[in-house]
Image 1 (cartoon, one colour):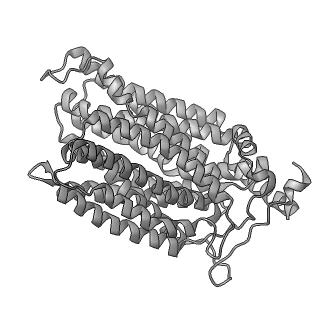
Image 2 (image 1 turned 90 degrees about the vertical axis):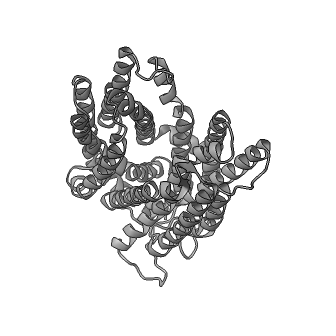
Amino acid sequence: MSQNARQKVMEPETVTSNGQSRPFGFRDKVGYMFGDFGNDFFFILVSSFLMVYYTDVYGISAAFVGILFLVARLWDAVADVSWGRFIDTRKPGKHGKFKPWIFRMSFPLVISGVLMFVHIPGMSTGFYEAYAFVTYILWGTFYSTVNIPYGSMASVITNDSVERTSLSTYRTMGAMSASLIINAVGPILIFVDNKASADGFLLAAIIFGILSYACYLACYKLSTERIVLQENKGSKAKLGHTIKGLLKNKPLISILGASLIFMVSTMLIGSVNVFLFKDYFTNTAALSIIGIIQTVAVFIAIPLVKPLVNRFGKKETTSIGMLLAAAVYILLFFLPNLSTTQYIALSAIGMFGYAFFNTMIWAFVTDVIDYHEFLTGLREDGTVYSFYSFARKVGQAIAGGIGGIAITAIGYNSAREVQTEGTLKGIYTLATIVPGAIYLLIFFILVFLYPLTKQRMKQLSIDLTEQRKLKK
């Protein structure tokens, strides 16, 4: 690294609104939790119910909606990177570098979210298709303008690895809390006599929009950015130099790979479980039980995360969790004659295992942002986080059809009241051995490819401190 490059980064400072240093604490964790609480009021409403709104209220074909979702995810991926690069060229202000953008863009985001659920009666199918396309893309773009600074902000709230794990944990708590509210209250508001109601959807959007905006304001008020670095200039602004650094960032590449295949498994299980309980166990009521248990598993894991990470490290704790999940799902494959209750009880242990990865993934991202600075001398929180988000959204676009393709491949026939024995075995295989193999692969990625152990993170913190002193 050249001496010139070294001079372009300032020593980090701790700042507050009154100019005095306030230690990292519970207020920051709650504030950061509110950020994803706000995000997921709309994100989960959209991901869970927008498809049925478009098909049943607008009368749009499911095929068109599928194309819209694919195009939107690819556009969002580009928007993420563009916005991340833009933010990294901005100077930190009185309230930090990222928080102000949450404050500025959250209101347009909420308004665009409500607009998605406005129904004008009597219009043509073409009008509804065009309206859906414009409003959904607009909402996704505004979502990037809030979510990218929000995700990037964790790395400047604190530079302590264990404290960042707490932020990741509280972020997951916010997301899961929003999920519980949406899934419990949403259907009551949006369905009337078991049919989608246009007025009900709009009412839900307004209520959750107000709650979402209140959460964003709480995130802005309660969180404090402490790590203040000078804006990037000169060579730092060159995208090619950044990409070269990203490609050399082994922790980023490995955690990105693990995250992508974890996403594929999550989407696959979500798709296959419907058929597993409907056709294999013939017990659709168990679907809601599985959803509740998955949420409970996360909340059981949450209080264990910080002490385990403090003692063993993120990589080490998450690896054991993924190994446990892999073992459980592989065991389920070899126990095909379980009752519904037995299957749910065993799978709950697997859910508890992978809950640690799901909870700590955002803490991993903040660590790879630090590693990027160590490698390149560039402090590009927004860019690194946006590239991570970019890859996840491309993965969502590609993986979106995996469940349907897999179900079709095993011979599922919706016209049959009872599926063939081969199809039922195929459904059980997709629900057990496939996620088991994926979790085992993630375990190997974490153990053999992801290099940031607990000791390495301690050394990285020391190295960055010394590096920043030289650049001052």
